[in-house]
Image 1 (spheres, rainbow, N blue to C red):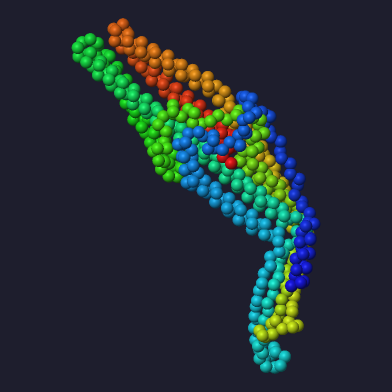
Image 2 (image 1 turned 180 degrees about the vertical axis):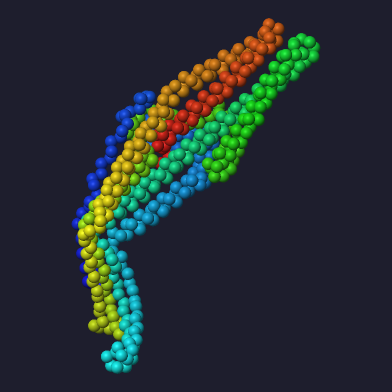
Length: 466
């Protein structure tokens, strides 16, 4: 055992001095502008995007409950978490190659020799017993091949963790968008129902007026057409609401309690908090998908080190220390000690270009990962820039639609009074009703756009749940 301990210590000293052939890693420069065109100066007291927890970012308590439900039950997120466990296990497997593996074994062999092969001229049966502790086929990592493969496995594992983070941020954003869309369609449905009821009452009054001969029959038919149009919208929006609820249930992985569902979008204008816009583009480097791309690049870089080390000799050791005896009771008696030591060196001489091709493939893969990393940054920059460009005009659009709805509402009241006073025809009132209905729908749509834009910006900046 003393010899074995000395051997292990010698191997540890050898590993400590082993060199690495992994190329020096340098993060590629971000191929995007230094700042966002539509970003406004940020308040110095405002925390960075990745310091904002999603529970603080999404203010409505019902929305927070739905997001928490999705994080606990969504199947895609479960798969992402299981992928991390698998990558962690593979990394531990690869990391184990850095250390010698010790095995204990015991064996008994029996051999019968026939008369013509035995030295005594008689058939003979020979037995041998043995017990040993040793290592088998351990590679001395002089040139860092095993360490390079270990670094590659580590980076792939870390990239999988970033992929799970990215999946979680995407899920939070998708649930928030689906929840807001449900609020949008529920408000449109409420508007369609109220409009349909109003038009039914108006239609009934016009029918009585036609029976009294006060208004022409044309007004009755035009009123009926307008009423049926609102009825069709009620049916259409009812289907939309049901589909939105189904989509939300799929994202959460379970039916959502009715108490957590929104009633109307107008109640949720403040449901999503503001994010600081004055941020440099370097914050994109903290996005999980970009970090995952960088870990993939680092893994490819480490693989080059392993491919380079393959050109050099490799030394493997096999050894054992134990005891051996011709009888079982003499196995541990004095003088029965036994040991074996089998070093082996392998020097590549000719492989028809296999090693060179492996190195070329590793270097090309590294270049591919560089391009993918740069593309990930460019795509992330565009997502943020598009969200900021939309956000820059949203407050003006929202104010314009609000004033438009107020103006068309006032116009409708005047048209209705003029029609009842006999000053205008029903055609003018009909146009005013249509204009008011469309203006109210467009106002609801802009409210949704404004809320979803904040969700998109939250996702584009890498979220803030961690």
